[in-house]
Length: 331
Image (cartoon, rainbow, N blue to C red):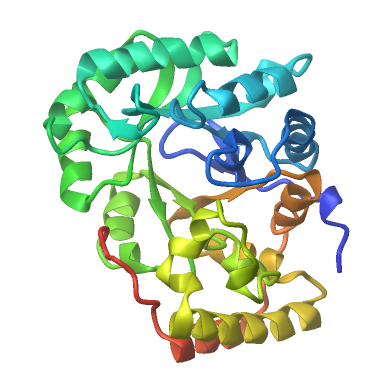
């Protein structure tokens, strides 16, 4: 196993901008403590700082990451004393918690403008590098939401615009009103639908793709062998990929990846993330973490490449597994 805490930084342009982001990004969702267990402020702050020390300069948060903006507030504390210009912050608006404590979508322009302002206050910054529409609101035309985000860019509150969890048609509608710099979508060895149409379109337009779930919520990291041992509050128990025959097939794939990783002197997670960040059109892989060692490990996926034989073995293993059964929203 390599020393993943001494990662070689891999910086890439964010779309057509001059902003450069690490090929591995820190996803702040786990530290919000909403669907994950055993989270505490001390470890969360240490994890963010470990990410920066390991060469990760790209932090991804959102207005709804915690009912009270927990992830934003932790990021602010973690960045205290750090140079602001050394960190690229992406956030999202359009999903929030209602009075009943449930998440709801709201893509109205007034809501997006308000959530951006509140997010900036929580983060303790005067602007973010990237502001995404978190998800299109089925009640609001995408063009209206895009218009609000264009206002944020024009006002300098965000340097660039993004959209997440959107179909290709929705991305194109957004882009016509507010030029996109980045899109954020699920992508991993088991979910590759966006390779068909979305990634080619993004590449043609010079739009970055930031992939979330590159480890499929830990499944492809090689440490989960029994889904029944996940905690009662762990949302992964509800995913088909963690159940029955699908889970068994996924474990068989992970076992093949484990052999490839061992021969390469890497961990399974590092091999999976390295494969992801070297797929055509992928700019960065969002890696969630709630302990320093987790982000140090995934940061160790940067700065090297799989050789031809390793890449061929991985593709063969994926092909043998077949694309996992999943609800396909993005092509």
